[in-house]
Amino acid sequence: MFKKWFGKKEKRTHEDVVAPLTGTIKPLEEVPDPVFAQKMMGDGIAIEPTGGEVVAPVDGEVVQVFPTKHAVGLRSEAGVELLIHVGLETVSMNGEGFTAHVKAGDRVKKGQRLLTVDFGLVQQKAKSTITPIIVTNGDVVASLEKTSETTAVKGETVLFRIETKA
Image (tube, rainbow, N blue to C red; front, side, top):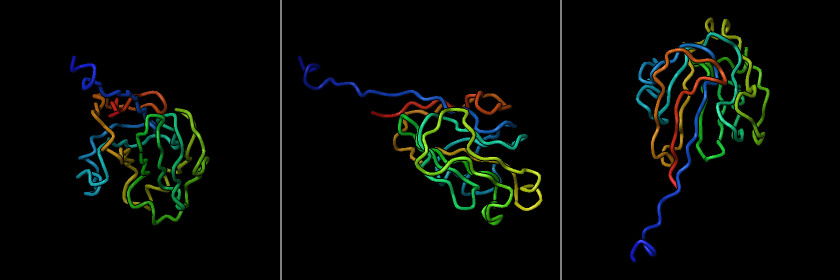
């Protein structure tokens, strides 16, 4: 009887976030920057890239492409907000070595090219090429299950499976 009135179950949505880059998967705690390593911006994973193309890890919308093109913010169909931050201290490169292929407001499909990056130049001019992929709105996440894989293939390898709250 009470179930009829009070027993509504939360509807949850599952979402797979695929690798936006090809490379070696690293725990976020190994990123040599305390803002990422201590999860101040949110939880996630990092990739030490071996290729120069960054692709969409989810179907969704581009929320922001930073003016320096070193980072992209996305919102998935399920409402998960992701930040792909290419390299460390790359903002100081002022866009040199980065080409954006999308802009804020664009709809993207998983695997669609977002950025092209000259990682040789990033190695010369920035602190690191390691690229954190962060869930920035953790309040919508019921659970986040990270991969145990150590190698990522862009657009294919599932980095984490997210279950969102209703």
